Length: 328
Image (cartoon, rainbow, N blue to C red; front, top):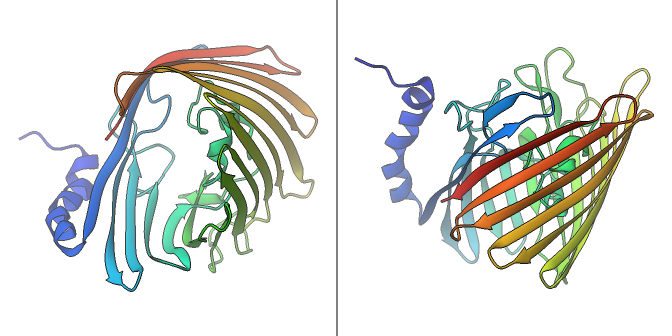
């Protein structure tokens, strides 16, 4: 008898078995996700078939408790479409998020594992939403010396998500809101740091304008400061971001990243372009990203991406690819 892949046979079957119970217990449960795959030539001149963006599967729901109060939950995993396995580098099965919370007039508070307040809000200021390994300068430059946790994934860094965390999103007043995250726990293990992690973002979004000012510090005392802004002129949106990150050490490493970008919607086409510069402890790199998406439907698009990286002290390199992305 042929065995099921481990991805399906363990946690996957448990989730399937629980679905009827979840649907019965919750007043609102949805299953959603994204499947992305493409063929691309990377900056190291090797050719791949695999995800250019990200693929995920999400279960989320809420229960109306009355008096404007609701319980929420979210379970999200990420996987590689080329192999069907959970994303690499020792990540947990529910890598994307595993939280339960309460939502009301006070805002939304969640406990568990989720994106920390800086990285949960920076994506809006990159033409690719910080989700393109080829063309996005944000993917390559932002938070260059900062991770949410240096050792959270079984000794490997966790760049965006905070475990054992508390997460808060405020109501919006006049277009202004705040997001906060942190953990009361001190991490354990070699190189994990001895401090408590915390992050915060002050956000503005109203009409065609949006901006975010965010700051974060992890358990190892690494820091990130992020500022992003954008403005929509009809079909054209312009955006820019500044990022300062510091890796704490006997001699701290500091990196400064600046990016500008634009998107333009023309019928079923979305055109994207961006330019970025990085100064990492004196080593300077520039980056140009170009791309286009063509919508086949409201949930499916095909795309092309191109990126060109020029380090100050090394040969330049380019990457390009084509892909398809479907959301459900």
